[in-house]
Length: 308
Image (cartoon, rainbow, N blue to C red; front, side, top):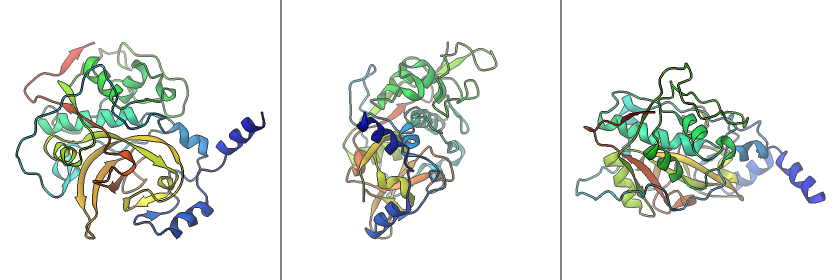
């Protein structure tokens, strides 16, 4: 009983403290640490609700990821999907107190590749809520044990537009039931990829996939120091592991100091980090971000809409 009381008390502690911030700053990380406005009023328990308990590793899936044959097309030293396809970029959203980043990062990667291939002419948001409500993960409470579960669902069942099924799982309340119609009771149409590709533990293949075919979903390990991230190229500096987070890799580059990095979209709102994004060291599997990444396979001339 005493241990349980101590555990409950520890989860009620503030997520961020000035003492811990000074400890991180004393280690002189290459990135800027501070107190992010988005996280400053959260408790440790609040923050855990935003994370996944599943680790970033390749696991079995219903629909086997395809390994796309590599070609000899050169890729640039720097690539940023936001710069190359500005008309395709979906806004950075805030998931609230919900472990839904695994669903949002998947639908964003699906959307961005559809736009890149011309199936969508502009930024189009697909429904992460539909995955949360209709897959076997129990919404916010169903911490996904693998990123590919979202891709299994998208490839086999399909997903509607977010304008059809809007996001409501912000606050850890019971997830809404799986809908059979849109929120306004109109007909629900779903969209599917031709399949999905997986890239694991191969930085060069991941770099080429992002540059040639578009953004990829990935998962990485979150340590205590990441909660203090403000800007710069993140690398682990301090603290214990607190969970896992799914994100979207949208590009890569190299700093003036010669540090390779990934450009990554997060789901804590546009005011967090570098306009909702962050950079992380590339080529060293930093925080396991290169363990496994997934992206939609889209044929530009093949219809991808199905009835529900």
